[in-house]
Structure formats: structure tokens, C-alpha cells
Length: 462
Ligand SMILES: Cc1cc2nc3c(=O)[nH]c(=O)nc-3n(C[C@H](O)[C@H](O)[C@H](O)COP(=O)(O)OP(=O)(O)OC[C@H]3O[C@@H](n4cnc5c(N)ncnc54)[C@H](O)[C@@H]3O)c2cc1C
Image 1 (cartoon, protein in one colour):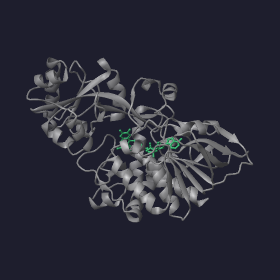
Image 2 (cartoon, helix red, strand yellow):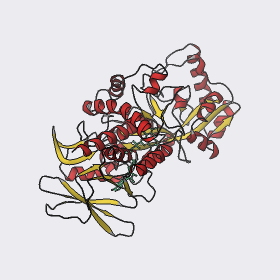
Image 3 (tube, protein in one colour):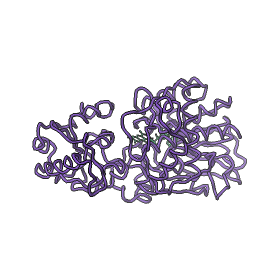
Image 4 (cartoon, helix red, strand yellow):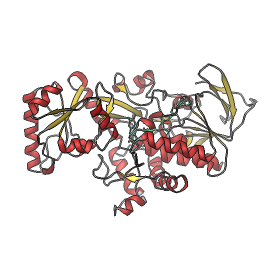
């Protein structure tokens, strides 16, 4: 990802704000910039933009929204920020946590009012680490639908989206002001465009095995479940420009991807009573700690796999999620009238599974806490018929990147931003600190939507 210092570079085409990447972050940044009537060009490497956003569940966390107030839920940016820092054990960047948690309720409200993108509250269960219900989604409950709605709004706003256009080179002056960039087409032809401000919204480096091995060695051999085109361009540019980087060892993992089907099995099942066991039928962790760190735990089990085990009540809850319904259709979900039958279908030790479920039900009967510090409730007792699915641990997306300030300006030193370079979403450092356990559910789309909102506004205010 070359950087060229070329102060005299001239460009045949010029657009005030160029955005690299058309995921949630790039789309929201474009809408925010268009609000001020400024011309915007989004460059997207894929022919059909999808990014990790379209792979995601599309759940966006926000504290202090109208949807929460309507349900009588007492929440605020401060309360949300406290939950983020509690999960990250205080290691998330406080400037960004504050900026994002304050911006996100405004951003969701604005997307609804100005762009007709309705958000509703995901109700019925709490994701690990959230004190109250605060995940919001579009009615279709998928990231693909969220992105489709954002792209319709982008088209209506008059922003230009150029697909099959991979940004490759940046041209800067001696002060590291971005003057323009080069992008290449699939046939190898190249074009250049000049700009006043550049917003990097091209996510992290999960798609680059070499960078993952360097910064996140524990995930070097894990499956990457995010968008393959997110292969570290923003990080390489940031490093080449001398920008600060942080949290490069931080990432969102997931310990529940149906294998070999490659379908996400919602962690809502764990939060409502499901358990994870290994091939010996033994539990190995507190499932309520979070799905991100579960990735590492699952990879440590025999065969690098685990098994989600639950019952019909939880199966019905799962069916509310499109991904889970897809897993059922793919034949990933097994059913057994007895635990022995389920164990045979999953290929795990029957006696071990029966022992584990008996222990878990005894804990639930007493509302008791186990050796991993998970408390079981009476209503969570596992009853026949039983269901289960074989799962693997995966890398979803990286959480490290360029250090940015509260306006998403890329910093070269504390309080010293580059003149006109912005980064947000997965392209910047996140709010999860530097370890897998720091990821609070929703931190990804929080960074993308709030960061895009802030970066688009800041770039257009220049
Ligand atoms: C399976 C899965 C489920 C998830 N579920 C959730 C969830 O429910 N809630 C949540 O908060 N987070 C979730 N996440 C994380 C979330 O999807 C991401 O954090 C978020 O989508 C990042 O948005 P983004 O716009 O920064 O990146 P993306 O959506 O990945 O968009 C980046 C875009 O940049 C393009 N690009 C890359 N390099 C270039 C280049 N050089 N030139 C041009 N274009 C380029 C890519 O093609 C891509 O379209 C999930 C992730 C996965 C993988």
C-alpha cells in the first residue's frame, strides 16, 4: 500500500471527501458528509459491496435511545461506557469510548428521522456484559438488511459509490496531507482522484494471514469469519504515514460457528441456559463471560471443536434468528430424544454429557453458581428433547488500528492529528482494549456506525 510524497501531484478528477470502504462505517460517513451538501465519493473494492457488515447480525448497541425510553429502560451513554470499560477491564481508550457512546444514540435517531432506517430494540435477553437491553436492529434482524438500507440511503443522498475500485496508493505532501489516491479496477487499469479529506472505512486486517500471525498469534490458525477483502490496507497506510497504532492484539473472536457449515449460532442460546461441552461431554468455561473469549477456549478443546447443548425451549428462541434457521436448514442442528441419542448424533461421549447435564440441572434447581462462576437459574434446567451443534472458534474481526481522536482524526502523536486523514469502524483502533476478552457484544458496529457518523461530520466540517 504505497504512500507517495508528491506535493505537485495534480488530479484530473477531484472530490472533496473520498471514503475508502462501503460497509456500515463508509456508508454512514457518506450520509453524514452529504448532510452538509458536500460531494462524496466512496471507493469499494468489491463489485457488490458487503463487507463484514453484511456478514454480521446487524445488532448495534446504544445507551439512552428513544426505543429504550419507550420500554422504560433506564440507560445512558455513561452507563453504556461503564459496561464497555468493565468488559475491557479499563483497557479501552476512554476518549473513543466517550465519543462513540455519546454519538451512537444521536446517530440511530438521525438514521431513522433523516434516512428512514428504523431501529428496534432486541428484547428478551441480555448479551454478556450489557447491564440492560441496548442492542438495536433493523426489522429484518440481519447485517445484510442494515447495509442494504444504508446503501439505499446513500444513493438517495447523492453520494457516489464506485464499486470494483480498490484504493491502492495515497499521494501526500510534505506535511503528510493527503492530496489524492489511486485505485485499481479488476482488469488492472488504474485511476486517480484528488480530495480534501480522506476517510478510511476499510476495516481491519483479519483477511491477511501474515498480519494476523504477527499481531494475534493465538488466532494464526483459526478460521477468519469476516470479510476477506479486509486485509489491512488502513493499517499499512497508517504505519507508512507514521501514525500511532494501538490495540493490535485485540480482536473479536466467536466461540460458536457451526462446523463445517460455517454458520453463526447465536450466543443468545448460552445466555438463556445452553452449555458448551467438549468431545468428552465436559464443560470447560463460563459461557456467560462472552462469545469473543470463548473462541480461544473452544480452540483449546480436543479436535479444536466444542458442542453447544440445549433443549427445545432454546431451539425455539434460536429460530427467531435468521442465521440459526439457516443452520437448521443446513442440517447442522442435531436432535435427540435422550442425551445418549444426542451424544451419538454429535459424536461425543454419552456418559460424560449425561453427567454434565445432571450437574448443570442440579445447579439450576438450587439457583447455584458453578466452579467457573456461572450462575444457573431454575427456569434454565435442560429438559428432553435435547438439541446440539458442533462448533468451532473463529476470528471475526480485528480491534486494533490507527489511533484516532474524538473526531476520528488519525494521530501521529498525542493531540497531533494528520492534516486531513480520518479513520473509523474497523479501520481505527476499537473500544475493546488489546485482548480478546475485552470485546463487548456490539463494539464492532458501535465503532462503525458512531465512528462513521463522527468522521463524516468532522471531514465535512473542515
Ligand atoms: C459473522 C459476524 C457477525 C458479527 N455480528 C456483529 C453484531 O451483531 N454487532 C456488531 O456490533 N458487530 C458484529 N460484527 C462485527 C461487525 O460486522 C464489524 O465490526 C463492522 O461491520 C465493521 O464495519 P466497517 O464498515 O468498519 O467494515 P466492513 O463492513 O467490513 O466494510 C469495509 C469495506 O471496505 C472494503 N475495502 C477494504 N479494503 C479496501 C480498499 N483498499 N479499497 C476499497 N475498498 C476496500 C471492503 O471490501 C468492505 O466492503 C460481526 C462480524 C462478523 C464477521
